[in-house]
Length: 442
Ligand code: OOG
Ligand code: NI
Image (tube, rainbow, N blue to C red; front, side, top):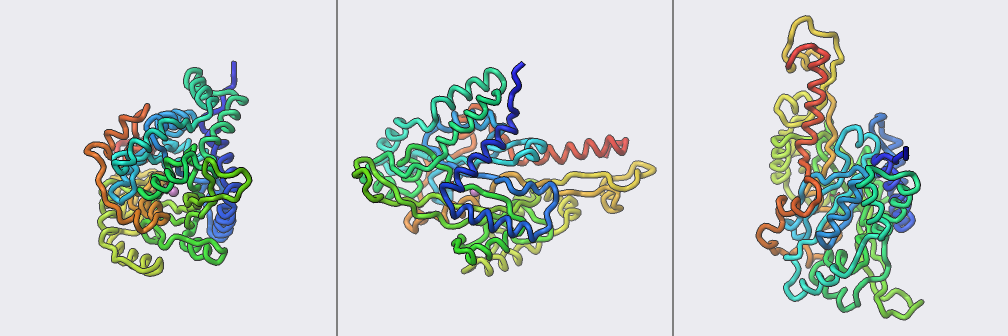
């Protein structure tokens, strides 16, 4: 009997290898990790906080075939596509999903996920579309051994130790940085003029990982701390305000670096003749997952938040706008805004008692279910923090039906999962367990 390396273990090894590679490629990212470790050391952590491992990374793909193969690769690492994000509404020519572990158990073993964008070809200028698609058609972003090993793993149900390590090693080829462009300087310039992201997606041999994101326990302290360490933060922290009961996701990042690149035909040994901005570092602080109703309230309050000139004012305005969002788990649950796990902590009631009373009496405790996905407006803010003014002011609409969940999911070789359903499932399981402990239905 061959012993297979588990998918969760494969994901953990992949995440560790990617992190080591990115730290060596982007030393400033190492500095960010040090800051995060220092902030986390000063903040009270719970054992389930899963610190010291990255929570997510991001890549941008050029064509559907790349999305199919990446789905199969991530599938062997226990990551499934969850959620659909249309960034075109914010002037960014991509739509996206996140590949992530979907069960509480798998998330606890290793939470790593990859925000994966796909170029929307209809948003390319007409005179560039065919050329860009021909460039993409001619590239293969996967090492041939990755294709072999993914097929083998799919057929046999897993990979042995040797194969698993080879898969991790060879898959890094897809995510590594290429300091020479695949296209001429002229083509690069035209792609770049169309949109910074179009050049980033089309002009290189592969979809270099563009950031990694560890978890920080106090993102406000980390935002402040960045400047002190010579790391230039983006202007504002995205997402909801600081609260007693954190909700959803708060994120900030440092500005993408300007890195030297070469073009085919440059004299060997000559200094790099071009530059490209794509890679950065990000941090995130996660809170409680919200129901559809809670999410709609979040969006509504976010849209009512007054614009601000800097992060301090923005956080102040957010806090004002969010005063009407209850800040205790009991109230959030009472109003059906948040997903929680129910835990029996007090003595068994002598007769069947409604859940709301058990909660009030402290017999049942509520613990927040962490939000494991992304926020379209925040993602757009992260993208935009690294774009030019000319990119940001672009407003074209994709072809009808192209930037839709249905179309995106039709490209995937496996079902596209729903974020709400996954979080709700965890809540339901805890309720079923509670009912079994109590011996009656709630
Ligand atoms: C992805 C930006 C989105 C996030 O954390 O919301 C993202 C990208 O820049 O490719 O990673
Ligand atoms: Ni990110």
